[in-house]
Figure 1 (tube, helix red, strand yellow):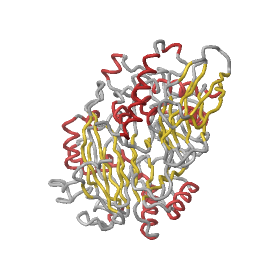
Figure 2 (cartoon, rainbow, N blue to C red):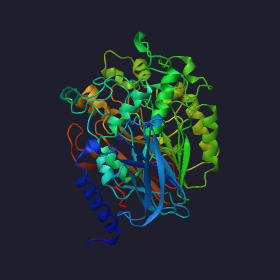
Figure 3 (tube, one colour):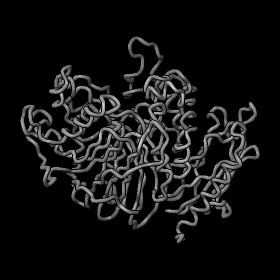
Figure 4 (tube, helix red, strand yellow):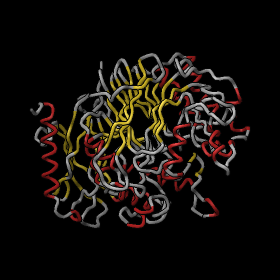
Length: 547
């Protein structure tokens, strides 16, 4: 029997099918990139589209409207817009005067044609029983198909999608992708060169936004986004990047490249403002406050590349920058919502990998550890300051959600979780009881960017994952777990997790797609891990949370 709550969804799908049937000539379609929404608040939300006008004029007029029904008959807001060449004909409307916790539908019109109908939702207020957020990152167009975006688009149980960065990749065509996809030209990149200029970045976003799964995911859910490094250049920091002027290349001024990347991001993502400051907050009633960080461009100092360098432990070294750090501490202290969700790009919990050098003849433990200093391990003093702050201020129920690393992890967050921790100090964490953990961290796998098996082979990746959080049998110190705070790890599969927040607990459920080298609609539940209110430690769930 058809449930009444699904009637609206049914009409919406029928409306979409009807629109697709009408779109016989995509070249003439002035809305080839679909629609999107984002940065939801209780009384407003950004709606987005991008025009490709039929004339060469520098401006193009149009109309938009928002309704409470999928057939766009109960219109509650409407207006006009002017798309401009100077903004790549992208349109962002901050629709105000909406009701909290309400689903809305929206549509654009120009040159006598209508866009797809988008669905969005404002954030709730008051006493809230449940919030569900899909968490994603790292979508490399040439590494695989965006099947996970398609599965998220299919969902009807989300408040929003949190994208933690690496929405695009800046490499040249063939520079960082699957060899079979590159050779087949099935997912050719525009431009074919590495991204350096504003027109380069714009063209790459346009390529991505023609992907049907990404386009549909934006159409169906509001996004809350932040950049990581590949929206500008690999391993970016405030004053430069590893992938800028490297190996003697002359790629111009970093500030100009960064400004171009920021502007293109602000144009092509449904984000409020001009992206000069991307760290910001979203409140979901009394249940959750989502605090989005910028761990890339705002204040990050250059990465240290040698773990034996004493400068690594300089207490003044920063990943956040002084202004953002002060804002974060005050946001945590003043938060009224029960769950404090930190949208963080790079892995926060300690990640000990030097032990694996015993199986890698070309690596010493120090050399292997030095490969992972772009994450919070490269800024241990500032991380320790944040952990101590949570402990001293008695701030509970902090959930860190993370992307960047392309793999799935779940952690208890402690100051010194193992004997491998900073400067040989004794651990302050009990892996059995969770004592010493001040927060939890959930790490989302990549949508398609290569993970361990695609880099070192499936067998080696499986062995590495198996041993990563278990006692070491042969390497000194023997029978010591290098990562006892790591409760879940998957280095091979691609997908996303759903963060389910309720008054009594917060749970992350990981879903992995069947394949990324072919289009598929198959996904499977992998594992779920949760923390109870006030406990700040993880326990394994028997099954995914049912919405």
